[in-house]
Amino acid sequence: MTQDEWGELKQELLKSVGNNNFKTWIEPLDLSGIEEGVATLNVPTKYQGEYISQKFGDVILYHLGKRAPEIQRINFRVPGNSGARPQPKKKAPNQVDEAAAWMKNDGSVPGAPIDPRFTFETFVVGKPNELAHAAAKRVAEGGPVTFNPLFLYGGVGLGKTHLMHAIAWELKTRRPDLNVVYLSAEQFMYRFVQALRERRMMDFKQMFRSVDVLMVDDVQFIAGKDSTQEEFFHTFNALVDLNKQIIISGDRAPGEIQNLEERIKSRLQCGLVVDLHPTDYELRLGILQSKAETYRKQYPDLGMDDGILEFLAHRISTNVRVLEGALTRLYAFASLVGHKVTLELTQDCLADILRASERKITIEEIQRQVSDYYNIRLSDMIGPKRLRVYVRPRQVAMYLCKQMTSRSLPEIGRRFGRRDHTTVMHGVRKIEDLKVQDGQIAEDLELLRRTLES
Ligand code: ADP
Ligand code: MG
Image (cartoon, rainbow, N blue to C red; front, side):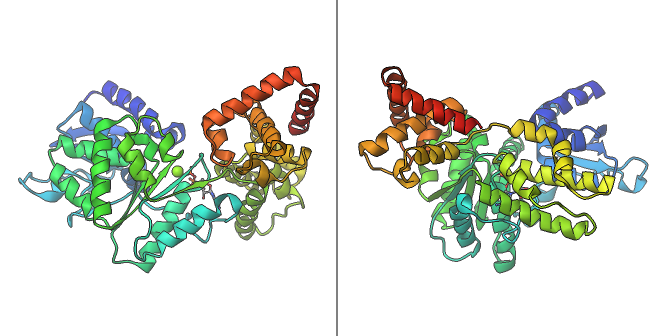
């Protein structure tokens, strides 16, 4: 493989791993050579080599294998460190650990690394995530399997991966006898493809079927990838038949994942499906307080003015990752300049984040405002009652959600007591008509819009 081809391959990796990962981990890699089926990559430090191998080994091998099928393994080397030179083993037929770096000698499946920060202790529970948290807790007890699979879904950065890792940690201590495997759907695919290429499907099947608890993160990734879906389906069924616990996450409800086979959707719906709702103010504040506590220990000299966390909880969007990033940056900045965190510093230092989160109106806010405005209870507006006093405000709220957020009709329907998207469409049209015919409705809409935008 030429250096040019290696350059192209890196560009493919950029698409798979995303910009940040690419810059930190993949960009610095150099291809040193390929010998006897082993590709040697130069890395700046041993730690980086280990991390990259754990986290991106599969995807790198996958792309290498597409171009050079003879490559069976990757070896990471720190240049100038002769001790780590590749030692290609003599090939012996049927030697299990040779061909595939991801297979352990004992035939078990190594999963992806588990982040030590993602535990139940560090997970802050609030209304939007209490069900998901309770379900995760139950599964983590490692008792008899009661619902299978557990399907967790929700938008980006709401804690799906955190909860899955927390389950893995808890099971590791409570039930060390169990073979617990966590991996992303993407990794599942890479391993599957690799097994196909190496004609090791029997091993692949056997290994996955020896798992006691299988967690597959971001299942939407396999949508549209037919043979991977097929294999996933078989693995899934085999484990369910053996009464082994399966936990799956996705970015939306099983029924709404496009290009996912019907039989898989219905299988995924068989167990317990719970969603993580977008965070509300209280949860955001709780998470900020808990993180700030950690920082307070780390930087005992750095004070923070009152009201800063409230300000952030109020102003930053629902994604917890963004929230955490903001706080991290704030403390880093304050510790650099060596003074207390003030509101002014916060606004300066987080100007870009605050701008990006401006005016992101949520379905929840709209529902609350509209029910306040019409003086009905939020639960009645979302609930099943068909009385006119509830129906009209409900339709107004649906209309505003369609107008003021980027949510799709099915998403909006879901947040209105799991109504169908056609119901939402009907409501939106109704209000569009009334807006023209009925001056009162037009005025209501105008007032509500102004309140929501303020
Ligand atoms: P997802 O997988 O749903 O995209 P993650 O689980 O990766 O989201 O969460 C994003 C970040 O937010 C992680 O750093 C995670 O620890 C944090 N986080 C999310 N929800 C919570 C919560 N309820 N309490 C504490 N931290 C949270
Ligand atoms: Mg995730």
